[in-house]
Image (tube, rainbow, N blue to C red; front, side, top):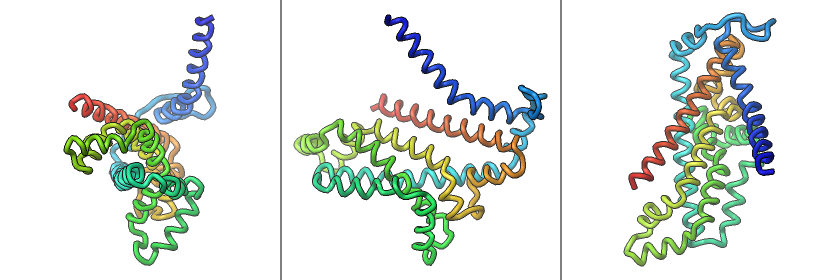
Length: 261
């Protein structure tokens, strides 16, 4: 009976993995094909499209811009959410529902509405500056950052940890940085990686707020679709691999830091 259940579970997981990977495999095959229109498999294979992509400085500039507008909002939002949740959890627990209602509002606001609202609000001060996108992204990822960190805080008694640290002579700042943050580090990592992947794949806000004036990977991919399907596929594959490598490296570095501590 147990063997039958294990077989069923493995089959289900195998089908799910195949379903998720099949589109990526198809995109990769198309990115290395010469022609693929009338046959089941490509008529020939080449890495010409990758050579063309990697030799184009436009790609590297777009990738750098994408990383900038993803990393800076994550840092801003992470600091803001951590401090807000710490203060509310320890000193103002009755205001937690109010904080939650405010933070989760971006869930119900479509990206197009948010972009138009920001343009109307800040057009006279920030104009078409890149910082309007940075602040928009900071608001956009608030729910994802909040939920992951809040779930981790629920697994520990923050107030008791802070009080115990203070009894041992630690200041509130040290209690926060040396005791609370290490205990919720898994939630922080999940929130950061989720936010990073969402921002690198977000198109509506960047297109409406700054468009082609600040070409990111998303904008470049949109333009490439009009020029060449092969290079677009190569860009998608490269984009996916870069996100995967960055996520893996971040997880490995955080694990190494935990071991050293």
